[in-house]
Image (cartoon, rainbow, N blue to C red; front, side, top):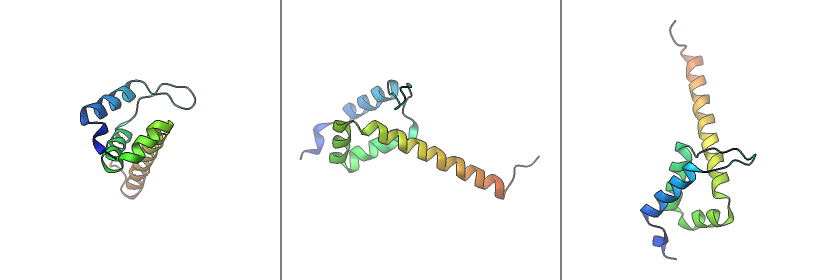
Length: 90
């Protein structure tokens, strides 16, 4: 399979369109976040067949939302853990 089916400009155009108009499962409009965009770009580079399969089946956006939520959950947990170990000075 030729991995150059979608060039960088086309990928960026896809990411921009997803950033502007994405809908969650409950119907709310919500843009993709920083970490989901990074994951999508990485998947496009590293596992193009999976990227295209997820895109074709419609699961790509749901997976990216899950990745974004998980990333922010981990960031929040790390911040809370740091604050518990070393509270901010008052």
